[in-house]
Length: 118
Image 1 (tube, rainbow, N blue to C red):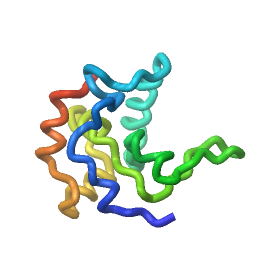
Image 2 (image 1 turned 120 degrees about the horizontal axis):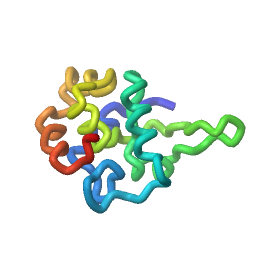
Image 3 (image 1 turned 180 degrees about the horizontal axis):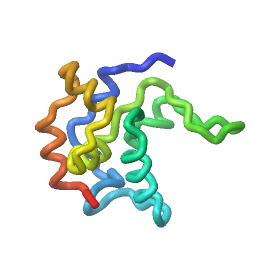
Image 4 (image 1 turned 60 degrees about the horizontal axis):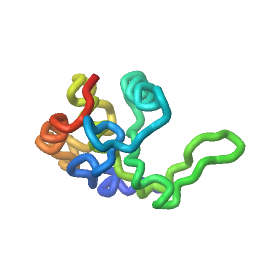
């Protein structure tokens, strides 16, 4: 798998049913969003992919390990990035995107208004 770095930072706003949204987010199993947020805060290394760019791009779950295997065509979830930014926890992938000019800090700041920060 080779990572498409431009595709990784293609999101400019949260998608219409991003689970991080204050309203109209995709419903997740009770506690799942809290677990995702905690994982984001605990792991400075890994992006959280937009749910609309995972399996649709050829990613799959390995049946033996249960781990998601990315296709390399996923995009980083803007809701997740806004959550991290609001919590002052810009992770390594975000820092790289910002440094490379592929991620716009203003897009992240705008997205914060629409997501659950807690």
